[in-house]
Image (spheres, rainbow, N blue to C red):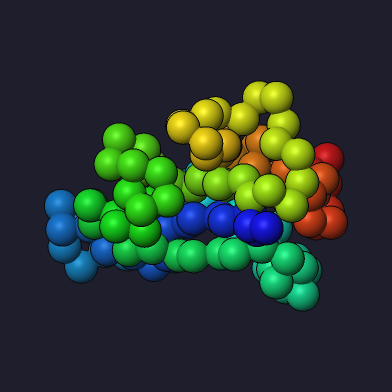
Length: 114
């Protein structure tokens, strides 16, 4: 049995195109906020925060080289995959931030977004 895997950009990442500046991902920030709202629930899924530069080996390993955009929730087999999940071979995954937030509430007990 496999758990859901959430891949995010690490907060405070740097971009060589903008020396001396640090960033957060605008798509990952709401997810980080939800994760911080109830840290005990984080243990219900696997969460990895990755550096900004590509190639992103953990994403390539989990999906493939064509799907390196983050955030992504790769669905495990603990719960049925929703019908709107993207498919890549046997893998099911979601990249839309709002949908990831909804699934974290449905599948892992986080608060729902109002």
